[in-house]
Length: 284
Image (cartoon, rainbow, N blue to C red):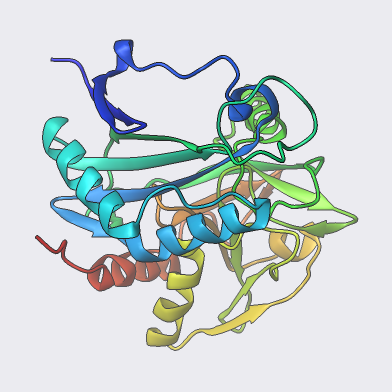
C-alpha cells in the first residue's frame, strides 16, 4: 500500500498529492519546514519543533494556518495511516498560492501546508552508531540561516561534494569560523571535557542541540557557546554532529585529521544514551 500525505485539509496518496504551480514555496522558496523524529510510539521533542516552526513562520510574516492541537491530531492519524513505527514527520508550510511576482502579495492568501512521514531507523542506543568522516567547506548560504526555510540548495551542493569525497556530512566555515553542518549542528569536546559549539546567529538553533545541553549538564559537562576555528575542532578529544534524525553522530576525521585517537567516542555515546532516556512518551 502506498504512503499517505496530508495536504491542505486532505489525506492523499503520494502519487495523488498535488500543489499549484503558483505556490510561492515552489517558485521562490517562500516556505518553511520542520522535522521531528518518531520512535517506537514516542515523539521526540515535538512541542519544541513546533515552537521553532511558529518562530520561522513569524520571521517571514506567514500566519500559522492551523492550530497546534490540530497539527498533532493530523500527525497521529497520518502515523497510523502509514503504519509508521520509527522515522520522521515532516512539515512544510508556504506563504500560499499567488501569480508569480517577486513582491510578497499585499492581499492575504492562504498558506499551503504539507505533512508527510518517512520510515527510517533511529537507534535505541549508541552501541550501533558508527562514526563518520567530514570535510570543511565555505559557508555560502544566505544570511538568515536561523530561519528554517526550504532554500537548501547550498546545503545540497555541499553535502553532495562531501559524499564525492567519501564523507557523510560537511562542516561550514564562515569568515574563518565554524558555523554548523549542512543538515546538522556541530560540536566538539576539548581536553577539559567542555562541550563547545557555535553560538546562535550564524546557525540554525537545533532542537536536538538544545536538548543535548541538558544532557551535558546531567553528565557534568560544561557547555560553552563560542566562536572557534576549524583547527580547534581538529584538535578535539571528540567531535560530533546532532540532528533530529541522528541524535548524536561521532566524527572520526575532519578533512585529513583524525579526531582524538579515532577509536574512543565515550562522551558521544553517553550523550546519545542520556538523550534517548529523556524523550517523553507519546501522549495518546
